[in-house]
Length: 319
Image (spheres, rainbow, N blue to C red):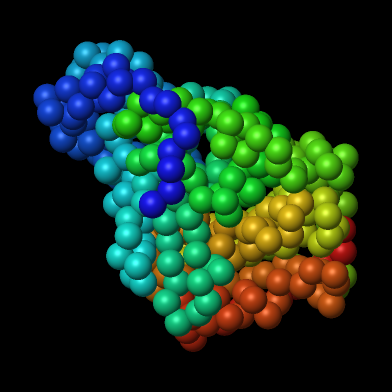
């Protein structure tokens, strides 16, 4: 086992243990009722605990701060996880800088394809926030000890070095503490992934596509993709059996790997809103066909593993 070089605050640990014993289960029930209810896609609130609800929970259960809600709620975040290979459930909860909302996420594994498609709990939370046009300034974990893959991914975001990490053991760290000399976007003169930025405003298909809700959502997602290193944005739209539409955009890493593919990003939102893979009836990919980065092959592979039989339309576009 690795050696932990970081100190923790025993008063935080004692406080959370006391709350856990007295109101932990009730707090989790309130969080689940508020953020995992069906029908939240229209407001893009799947897996989101609004700030007002968090404040109500603090008052009702006489908690002391938002951190208490985040740490006590980790068990709810674990219910989002889908780890059929490892059986190891990871939960994470992020605090949105812009709204004060809490973003819940968990790890996701995809059988019948390679392990590199796995979504970690921390990457789930950050990808979900990116799709909402927000950023995460604090994240709660079972242990404030994300793997090296996650540290590299989290460092890609503009708030990365100042990200605060907390856990029920009493650790209060920053990403800068855990990754003090990162290879990040600033090495290449880039600001990192910015919430809500329209990075490719002129993005358009090479062949005219008839306007539709799916195409409009695809273009909107593609224009917000974070692809400063390849210049090849990708986006995926998933059309669901109930008529709803979910989209995701690629998020590149300065290290190239880890980069979030557009289908993985769309699946984050799919899972956050409580849908299953077999709810998908049609998928459309926008990519720079035969570009330096072309998402056609890996999107076909992952989609074929999780939703065999679902047709994939591919639209070639230029930034």
